Amino acid sequence: MNFWKEHTALRAVLMLAAFIGGFALLICGWKQTGQLGGLGLMLLGVALLLGTLALYNKPFEEPRGRKRR
Image 1 (tube, rainbow, N blue to C red):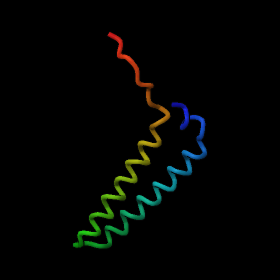
Image 2 (tube, rainbow, N blue to C red):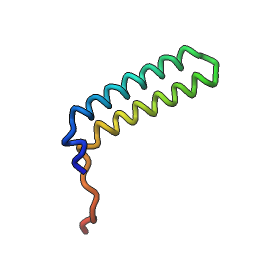
Image 3 (cartoon, rainbow, N blue to C red):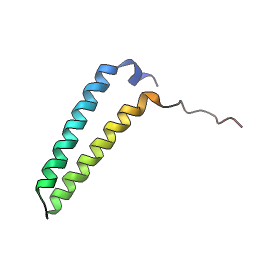
């Protein structure tokens, strides 16, 4: 799928939004020390940062196909 290779501006905007959102959730969760809701915010922030990393790496993936022997 060449969608992410062809739409680099969209990919950059999505990565920037996910990165800023993930960092904001991490910081908000960190301020809620000792509360279970803070842990949930931090986990959601980490998930957004991992999603950003996956979105960054998507155009560099090899296409899936048969493995050669």
